[in-house]
Length: 265
Image (cartoon, rainbow, N blue to C red; front, top):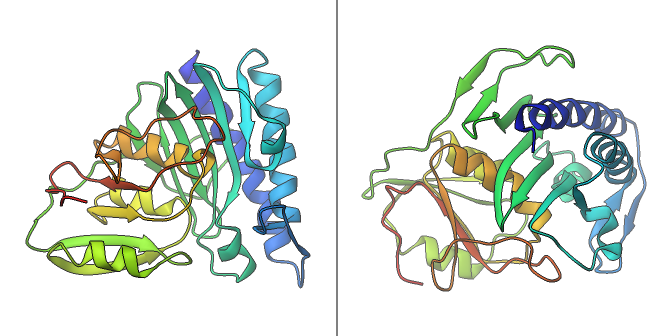
């Protein structure tokens, strides 16, 4: 894989998809439909999926592509594949809360090694460079030239006063019970894959997810967190979260800075 080319393509497609998403987001109204699993989908999800899929297939025709909006057609995986959630945080988008993201990642041998998370309404972009180091780019964002880049890294956590981030739309009692086993200084709520990025930048130390997610929801954020020195493990046995699973469903997981002393689950 030409990682330099991949980074440039992912960045360009994310910006183009983000612009299309924002056109729809800023319209007076937009239709919301339900998929077969009763999750919502909008014209923004579909338009971004078409744009990103076409761009990735053109640039990397020999690499398998998995996307949320085409998931019904995916029944096999390979050692290497690109995986896309064109609009993660559809509920945040529908309620105009801004915490939605464009996500593109490369998985190699079960591990997300490169990825980009772009939050167009927040004006924040995080990605891994060709070497795998994670960066945050400052806007305004230009299609043809990168802006100011800042390497990001996870916190040196104070286990007596942790910063925790949790889902805005999927918070439940089990999550609260687990969080209560830590000494928490402050809690943040965020939507979509931004939670991984808040841990990657050191704005949070710990992100537990005790709820349903799919690989396309997490791969890009996982790659960004890994490139910033963080980790993502299964909730049940604390083994690394792996990708390429049949059906693409994730178990519960914990994303964290390695300085956090994880509690038994």
